[in-house]
Image: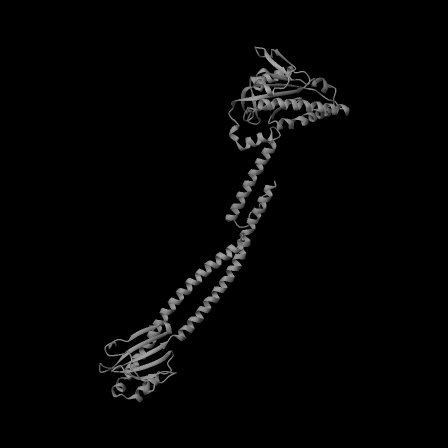
Length: 453
């Protein structure tokens, strides 16, 4: 399920805010409860102590009217719900409440007795279920216990203060939630914009558009991400341009192999087996002498354009364009067992393409030419050859020289193969040979057998 960045930030903000408010409320409740207890205790200890002093003689004399007069003074004291007076036997002597005044017939024994009351201290008891606090103090006459007074105090006024504080607290929480919403909108827009730009740029990149993403105005992690993406896009563009340039000289699969496995390019040079194919226009010097420069270039481009794609189709590399001829290598950067067969099939396809193009040009009244082909297989030195300012990835050695000599022996339209290449082809795959012969190439001290196809 897809969740937008805004909802993620807002949800996280609400979770953090909720936890903060919850913990704050719990801490506030606990703090206010302790403070309420302390305040009620401190406010009413003096009250109950004053009552205990004023009730000593009335209790000793059992003067009910005097007891009521003493209680009446405190009847409307804030928070006091109930005042009870007990005699020395623990019998309820008087009970005063704003809502209830005890008649003599209603008086009964209470849990207070001389044995259970603390004669020297004021006891303070909390009754959480009814929000009451009860204070009890002994009544003494000349240090002799004559009864006790019990005061029940409500925390209603304190709870009202607490309620107002909690309302304020919740209002602050609601305001914080609104601020979290506004902040989430801002952060969502601030963060999601470069993220959306990166997503759109990624989609464009997949379509071949390498336009860089504008970095955010403020430098942060998202700007680092944008800069990293732009560097990556620049690297991909460089690789794409390199591949496009490379496929002009080698087939696409060879180019991809070189880009994907650059270790195949032996910068220092290495001995490598390869099939070398030379093709050259026959009698080109005589043809160029009677044509204009523009016509010569048009003839060359027309024929080269016709069969260079064939070279790439058969996984060959156009290693060198030598004016009116080509040097084609099968086995760069890696020699494969089927390269000899591919080289011969490529030569046959090139010859068919040249013948078809020559017939078409002849019908149009344009000059046409014939090519000779020579192929040889063997090892050579493969590497970058040249100077610091101009280098060429090529293969050199006796194999290349012998392939060139064989091509020079070829008649127009003839394809000559060396005996070594012929033997590398399985018998079932060998093309029909019209003739085989030997010749002594220049610079070679032994005759070479060649096969014409």
